[in-house]
Length: 114
Length: 110
Image (cartoon, rainbow over all chains, first blue to last red; front, side, top):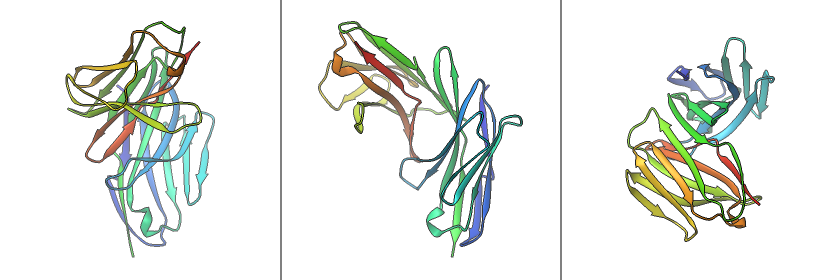
C-alpha cells in the first residue's frame, strides 16, 4: 500500500532559526515528489517538485532534498519568518498504466514564534 | 495517507465521441469533491461540485455532466465531445483544512 509519512507532526521554532521537515514514502512507481505549504483555511501552495533524478531543489528560503534510494525527502527552511507558520505537506506522485495517483502525507504543522 | 487517483492521465478523442473521466479518493470519508477545467493559458474553472453521494451542483451550463455513485468516486462524462472541451481536467477533494487537487487528465478533442 502506498504511504507517505511525515515528521514531526508539529514543530515550534523561534523566528530566525532554521528547521528541517522529514518525509518518508513507499509509493510505486515513483514519478515525483512535491512539497506544499498550506496556510490555515486556505488551499495548498506548491513549493517544490522533484523527479527521480533530482537531489535538491530550492525556492527562496526553502530547500528540498530527495534520496530516491532510501525514499526520503526533507524540506529545510532557512532563517524562518513568522509568515512561515503553516502546515507543510509532502505529496508523492505515482504514474502507472491506469493513470496518475497522488498520495498525501499527514503534514507537519510549523509555528514560528517571535 | 489520503490518495487521489485520476484516470486516464491523457486522452485524445474525436469530436462527437463520448467521454468518461474518473476520480477516486482514498483515506478520507465524506469528502467534498470537485471537477475543474483549465483551458490552455487560462485559469481554473469550477465545473461541478458534490457534497455527498448523488448530490451534484453544476456551476456552468455545458455539455458535460457529473455523477457520484459512491462516497469517494466522482465521474465526469459527456455524450458528445466538442472541440472546446479540450483542456486539463482536475479533480479535487476537500476537508476542513483545505482543498487538494488530483494529478489531472489532459483531454485533446480533435
